[in-house]
Length: 96
Image (cartoon, rainbow, N blue to C red; front, side):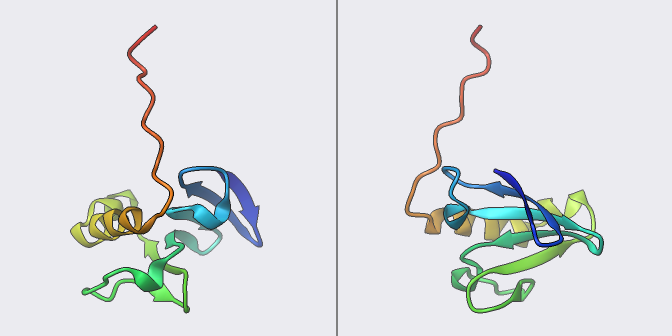
């Protein structure tokens, strides 16, 4: 899902179009890009990279390579594991 939220452009990643069930979102605004975890407070964060409040937590991304950092990949996997609604299977794009 893609939408505008306050002063941010948001790309949400989840099993359906409900923002409340998004696993994570990428937000873009004038001060930079961040990855936001809807259930961030429940995620294991041994490196202490997440910032935020009682539920949603985020991580500012300095560049695209930041998404490949071990701790970021672990957070993404942990966020997916918390979701009650499973992600749909990816479509087979190789068939005509």
